[in-house]
Amino acid sequence: TMGDRIAVMKDGILQQVAPPREIYDKPVNMYVAGFIGSPTMNFIPVTVQGTTAKATGFELELPTAPGIEKGVLGIRPEALTEHPREGHSGLDLKVEVCEVLGADQFLYGTVGGDAITARVDPNMKVSPGDRVRLGVDMRRLHLFDGPTGKAIQ
Image 1 (cartoon, one colour):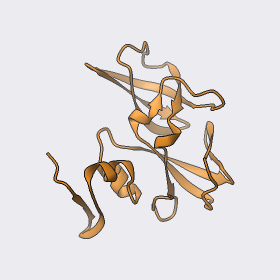
Image 2 (cartoon, one colour):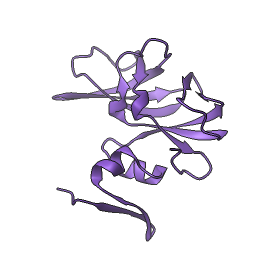
Image 3 (tube, rainbow, N blue to C red):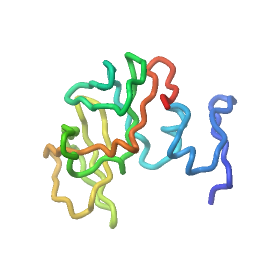
């Protein structure tokens, strides 16, 4: 079990001290976001124009303009859904590996050349080579500043 608060360090430098749930839900930077959670958070480089985040193969509308040009989207595998919400284009995942683990199924593949892992319903019918349109739970989307890796709140 984890303690009431944990400290995440990188190269001897303290990155974040907080309760485990806060570190998982609100990481202060990409290092912390990638360190906590299994499978690890997906990271997708994006260019940002106003409230639109663009990457190869998709665009997402952000709730507010973050004031950066180069960013990185952070999406946990469980924040990817089997169907995009109405009005959202979603991500087109090219499936390379399907791994059923009892109550979970993990899809490993690429979106526009970026490696992605999605946790989906184990009953979802999908095979390697398939293309699957995945939605993004926007409430669980993370955005990081590209050059610094710091979280944009």
